[in-house]
Length: 212
Image 1 (tube, rainbow, N blue to C red):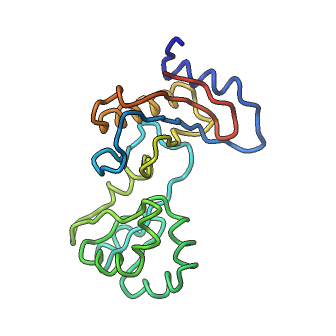
Image 2: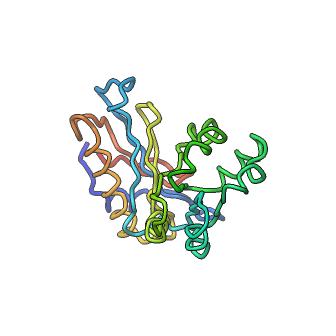
């Protein structure tokens, strides 16, 4: 089967997918091979800043105190101060709802132990453990980058998916995002592309189109 370029695969996937009454995501599906996925080094977990964005709003939350909390209120979607943690995450059900509503978390480094104790069981399986930030810093630029971002995780599985944008983006922008995601995945794998059996592109509810 002849390989397609990212742009060719995106265009075909958009063409064969029926129009929906909502804006679908455009996804890449990667199938791995010849890897021992019980070894941590062979697990994919990468934060990728998509050059053309996700095509939809990305929410970033931060655990911060004092001056840092004030600095980020204009850019973060959720700011959690130490005295708010118990109320905002008072039960596991409430914690799951809060965590699911946010795509990425940051945290002032001294707050990490308390976050791990209270929310580790909720955040860990969802790949949303906060990235620690040095006290006194200004994480505004990091938050703005994360709003263009994507976390790619295979969760120890041979087949995994990652969104590269939405259907209302241009094929060229989607292809640029897709190429970067593939570059990051192949760069993470022990034997690079030789550890990838196949790659497919599709809209969230459309048929798959093989890239390579």
